[in-house]
Image 1 (cartoon, rainbow, N blue to C red):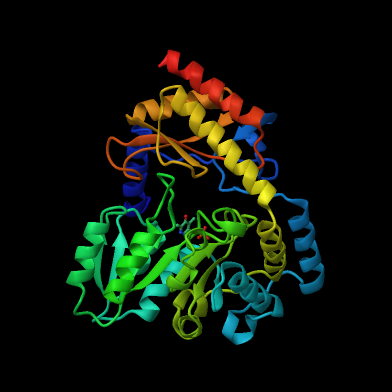
Image 2: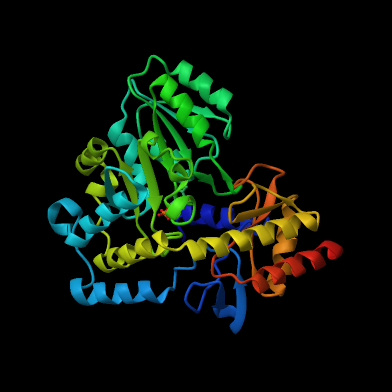
Length: 394
Ligand SMILES: *Cc1c(COP(=O)(O)O)cnc(C)c1O
């Protein structure tokens, strides 16, 4: 007989399935790219509108070759955490390179940005401290904050009045940390960093920004949202991922004040108790940052294609969230309509994902597309044509 736990999970899975809420995984049978093959349909060319492949580097030959060189030079794995015998020269080289790139004092690598956020707060904040978090912050920030003993405050997305109120309420705390995503991933909107830094400064609070959906393609040289606003020296802690624009393999980091990074090497649990990044991945990530830093042409195409898609959808009468980020959410409100549109696009070999409650608020269902520098004007036209015909069929 199955254990009752398995019976219960089976029931809950069936329930999700009957409500069409089960996340099915499509198997990709080609490299990740603007155009892919899916195992289910074979060699057919599918236009991919939902990867975090903002600069189109996921299968860039420079990165692939750098990874090969790394494999030949350093072998496959480290079989150790960093502080035992898992620190390779290439780890330090990448940490230094990230610091140079985003203009911070030092950087510590993690297995992922999820791990970076999971390890950060508990290590630096304690009872008597406070953390003030935007309500739309990423799940890894929410979980990381749950793990720490600091007093918790939350403000409505980008609401500077609520942030100001929280900062006043937290006045009695030793250390106050304001935490925000640089770009909110479900809406494609940027944090009000000038407002946040201004208020934090006034109240003597620290600022932490998770720039996962910005590093590599936002701001001068793709240095991210602090650089976009010239606020590099006012952001105390910057986290980010290697798993999106910067080649998209895996890995994350915390970057910032020297003492904070030094302390994380002593205390951050996902750093102390999880294996080091594969050296070949670090070698390729070095190449990714070199490429990204000089990739004004890619960023220009990304901006042009993003404008084309956003403007085209608005002209067709669709409600598009945000103003200029390559995350392009088309708000349908109704969850069934979002699914219907995604199915309609899929039937035309265009991949876009519907999101509904609880990932986004009730009644705010949407199709989220993500533009890549690897998309052509024709690709975007194809998407717009599909949206034009879906309008008359729903
Ligand atoms: C994607 C993302 C993460 C997680 O990054 P991984 O490196 O994939 O773990 C963390 N924070 C934000 C804001 C993200 O968008």
